[in-house]
Image (cartoon, rainbow, N blue to C red; front, top):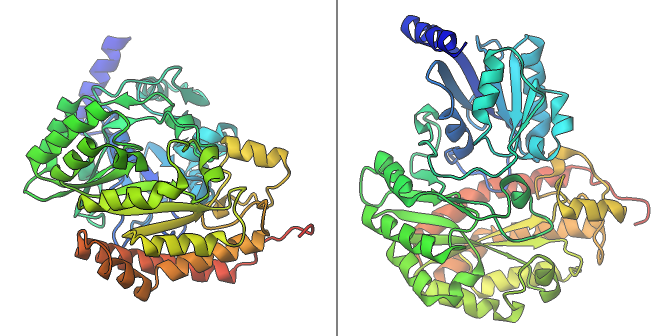
Length: 459
């Protein structure tokens, strides 16, 4: 049977009759999110998935942020990834192709968290990571016996990961940045986060030799920008230090995710700077100790955050600081308190969001048990809508407080005050970043203000 299959594949390659695949990143037309930029960042997930297809498959990637889906395209298979906030659009695309008889596979965060729901719109659902299970899926597809669900029983190691098919991205994608992954998984237990569910709690490391080879495949000149997709690049110090040496040798400029704990380690902070680190995305989450204790951040004291920020900025590294509104200890004063903190400590690029009970997370389970979720419209699960009843304020106060904080922080006067009076780390880079994001942030504010927010009778 295998010899016959190999012979058929060689015949397809020789005649040019390749199987055609469309991989789609869905997006509602005209809808912007607060982290949107002028040009979308290169998609890592779909370009990596594309690299797993056999040679007799011709793969095309469509990002609806900039590209149009041709629903009449001559394709054998459609793969769609779906975040919760755009899952309605993902299902719409899937249904239209299935009505034509095209096989559809759904994957990504939301289908992995709610596979039974996703299966109503797909021939198969890929749950979690593709590594270790994708070959079986393709084999079943070719033999006409697709199973409803595909999921790895164990977390796959990252060694041997192929180089993502960046060549499949359209010209509309950001040409200034390249995205790369060197680790996966998160050992923390934040109740609002789906990362440990999707990628596991075990921190897995990719071979640094393979990372070096991948960088060599696209680095063309000194000073190119790299965006690290790792959830916490410094969680393993030895791995991070060796990775920084590679970055230093390639002379890149990079950004990545970490925790405020990096400020407590002089060596790793210094090496990060020497390796070309421009900025670090740090989830501060809250300024209230009770909230920090509840999201696995007991390692930091709220009153020490200002000093830790100063240490990082003192090494010439900018901060993209993330804050979440709506924790149980938050009341109406949290919005001004947070904005004042951001301005006082000159956080170069602040981001605000509303606590969101994504499906499958411990947070959603708890809020459901407490009867506090009032909005199950998945399109509102974009971290800009209040969808549950807070403990110490009304839903309307949470929504309006978030909008006020977002509008205040992205005002030109606020941006200039932070950057001009701050440490001036990579001033023009952060000036450009703030004003690029400002357009999308103002669009989100205007759109939400026009919507009717569901307010339960108890309020």
